Length: 169
Image (spheres, rainbow, N blue to C red):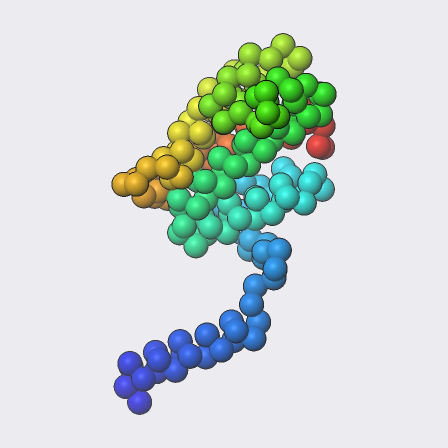
């Protein structure tokens, strides 16, 4: 048997197994925690836990744009959670009741006097937003591992602080 025939057989076997055993409907947990420690969101909200699995899983598979976009989504979601917990969600909504875009969410979060956001979190938020924005909206930007790697410390600070402010832990 030559290499091409063997590879064809392997692909057919893989496709057959995938057809009979697709991933779970709600998504599979990530096997590793290369970007965000799962312990930061464990027992908070199911959708936050799934976002962290997607961030870690996409990073582990080399899908860095997907990871960056999910990081952006996690930050946005956590900011909303904080405002909702404190009963002031209207401060981050327009007249139609829609939540602001991330840039404006960050601006209101940083300026809010109900809590004292740390200096490190204030500095990290724009960096997290920028990479997520480029991965989501730039036609020519393709995320690379180093783009996520340089955000890991910022992300840990922001996630832990926002989870705490939202009283999720």
